[in-house]
Length: 80
Image 1 (cartoon, one colour):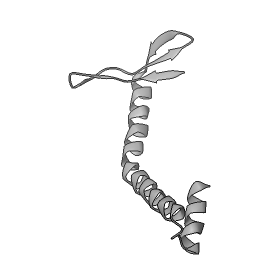
Image 2: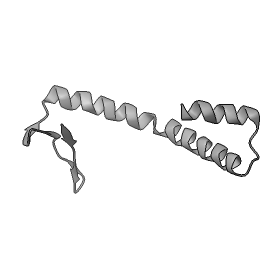
Image 3: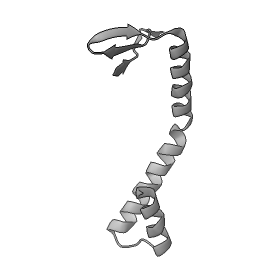
Image 4: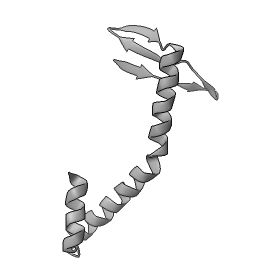
């Protein structure tokens, strides 16, 4: 299933999904639920960017052999 939402000249277009090649509009309830999901995703954007930046710092330290053991453990935890 492919989800589509677009903006045209500042106006939000209705969300649609494509199922088996057929476009279907979201119901009002589905649209409201997706708005909540989108808001939660945006709220976490700053934390994701900070984590990405920290991981980049640690990887740079790893590359130039200036990483400490504690930083190496942190990097390993970030990588999962």
